[in-house]
Length: 173
Image (cartoon, rainbow, N blue to C red; front, side, top):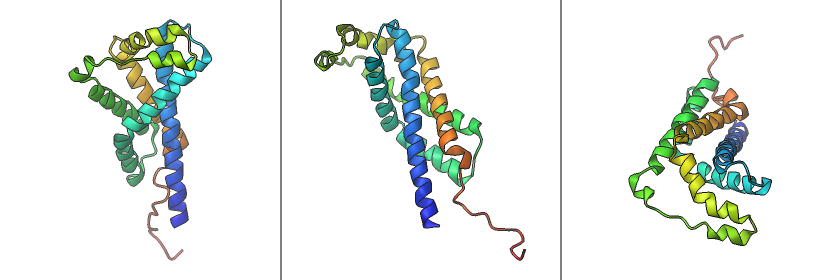
């Protein structure tokens, strides 16, 4: 029983990491389209990795609450996980869309030292504004949460609550 529980925890953690990577990849697609599509594969991979790590860190607490609810109540529907992912993404995005953060400036000049193209580092802030504050922000953020929820469901949500034993109605047979 304990071994099954530990294996389930490992499966949940792995599924969460996959979901965060999928959300980062989804936002990378939005980033590439906002950037005009003229980026190298390394730049896209770098941005997706940064976003995946940021998403995994910032959405961890609400995601684990949703995972706990799904496990305890044995929700195995993709609708639950996709909806929870979209709501968590929108909630996290709205938290980081506070007015105090609008005046914050970020220096992306360190990208120049990594060997990335100058175009990448000069237009990075503008692309962030298009993705997270532009007219496509609601769509790109909710889509990333939806994709993350679906990936989590595929990796772990389909078997939610499998460690919890339901007592038999007829134990004598």
